[in-house]
Image (cartoon, rainbow, N blue to C red):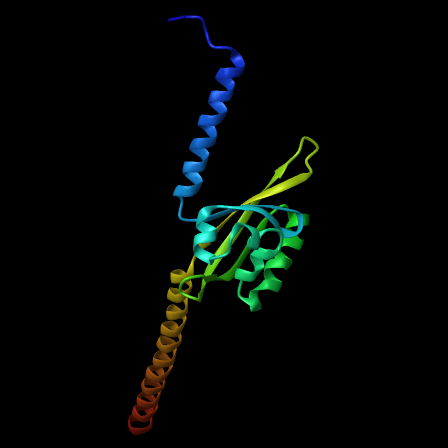
Length: 174
């Protein structure tokens, strides 16, 4: 058994493999849909969660193929967000994605951060899509409840105003 140290290249290679394994475990363990893209929203890679959610294969989602999973009414907003991201350095948009098995659209928020080269140019984007469907449903219910509360409050104030006017008419000013 030799106690000679392993060559530096071998240790570095082992470190890189371990680091990649940890990164893969992290990406595959989070509930978000993780992806990589180049300029203009052309996707180069997606996590297994993306494929499982949308039912699109690796090949189908490449380049702009990922838009097939986006609700047709939301595609223009998604692409507008990509156009804006090239100028602002921030990609942030909400859209509906089709769940492949359920064949139903669910709301997601998508965000991406640019990866820059030494000169500061954007070379790619790292992004996530997080489901917010339940939050959107709760917000819609809240809007309905607030509108109902406002309506009832106006009605109640109308009754109070009417009673006050009748009382003033019967008793006169004091």
